[in-house]
Image 1 (spheres, helix red, strand yellow):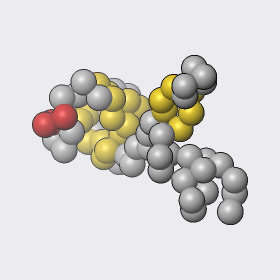
Image 2 (spheres, rainbow, N blue to C red):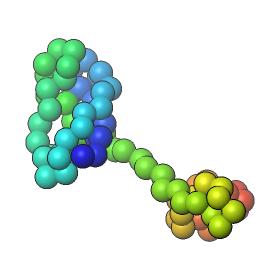
Image 3 (cartoon, rainbow, N blue to C red):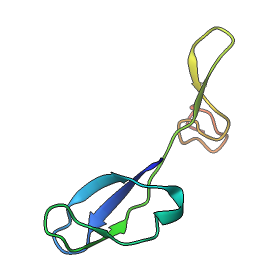
Length: 73
């Protein structure tokens, strides 16, 4: 099950909750105040191992560069 990030609309508490993928749009109560929380935009990075055994970003998951790498172009 994936972990989703939420932000409480009342107390602004940020928290994570593990949920099935088919329920991520359903409301979640804040663990601090019980008010409804909205799902925050989550970002994920994908890595793989190079032939040499090093962890490298997969295509498109680079360092934010327009070309997908970490060159900063």
